[in-house]
Length: 377
Image (cartoon, rainbow, N blue to C red; front, side, top):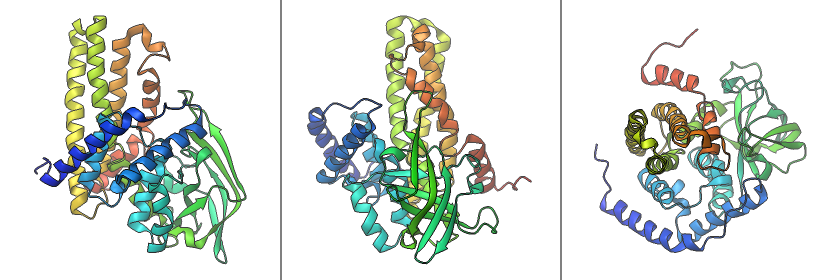
């Protein structure tokens, strides 16, 4: 498989680099991590710049390869991360683009691309985390609306979101993986209560969401009623297949910075540490090639990543944790200083083997869908 740029892709890469070099020096300072209204405004402002420059639609209307080039170059240049736009741009938006009606695409996609609306993800529940299909949030049909009651946890960016990609159970008598429906819920609807959650790293980008007889129009359903599990697999394929691409580039940059720091503080003389850095260098190069392969495969099958995204997610989660464990070895006692680079990243990395599907779940998907092994009983 030829993974080099075509002439068109090379031209896109060059234009993007030139634009980034011109615009990044003029950006305002980033708000503090705890200032979520400020972070929302900052992230939406960056998205608006991308839109006005003609780069916002790479997430859906461009080829997967062009999308990958965009993620690679923006990360290399130190451009702002998608931040509060993460769910809308990389989860809900691609799902609506793939599964929504023409009216739904027209209603929800342009505001995301213009930096006008933020989405959050209402999937996990207190009693159904890794076993997502065990969700119990109920939605009963009442005329032209669903009446939703239940709760969600680890709801990304709920405190600043306008919309929520919400999984509900519309048929409680159906088998576990059936009877589920994917809804777009307005976060300002009566009956929605948001309680922020503070993580180990001290941030509050997640929240509990409580739903008390919330009315969601039937027109906000993406896909058919009770077909939400299939739609959810589309969402998760984007989350596991391409959403972390920019983070791989960031990890490769951090790896180079760790080597520089180790040479400065004398820890480069440790041959075991050098071997760790060398192995991680090979690991992240392989992960980048796997990302390119996954994107090329998705391009050949309509743009939706397949089960191979689970291979990437499984290995990347552990490689990221190993990277920041190595950062702690480079820093030595300074790794306990929360003001030092990489310390908070190390705390955040602990969640990666849980977020977007636990490593155990990824093992199951690989075994059943790629290797063809029988389901466990």
